[in-house]
Image (cartoon, rainbow, N blue to C red):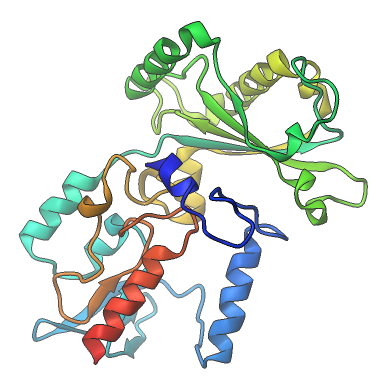
Length: 302
């Protein structure tokens, strides 16, 4: 499912694969914000919503933590379903679906600042290899057995010895992300890790496991660890704490749920809708879930 979404891109020049946003992911939010403000949208941040106001079976607005209420003909949730499920009196069958959807996040993101580009043993000369998605995997003869074992370890709350790793070096594609000293922005996208660890905590183990992941990079590009100027590790609990992602799941809804099994755009309360990554067809910054929700809402308003 994840590979499918990554290869649905139809932007000019994409050639079917995913692309990097110039200026970093914040560019997406800035562009959308500017377009929305031009259309007359008002934004309010640091304003926690504690309830959707439902009257006579119809959503009429929202109430904030500070007691203020906003009236609206339509209420749209962009969060994961586990966040918005507690904000309205949904019927029992829908809440049963929410319980069935619940999964732990198993993704770790290790952001890196590198003094120089790594030098790969298999391809020491520059052939553009730093610009693509770099996959670090066990030896071909044992890759599947190792990944299966790694997944089993994660389900048991243990660290996998060799998880699947995607390595990106963003500054080779977008030099604007580099700093004044020409250092490189990179990241390890690690699958899988446990949300909760058996017999220990992420706080106690995060630094050690980050060093272990860099040691895997050293197998393919010796000396990578010595190039690291700084790191920032996003574990599943830290993803939950920082971004409000339930159980640290970056996709809102696990990708084991297919298109037809995902959160509906029309929620089972009139006037209440969902547009987040848990909806059809999924997240990965493709914008399709939001587009589908918008067209659904426009149809109903007409």
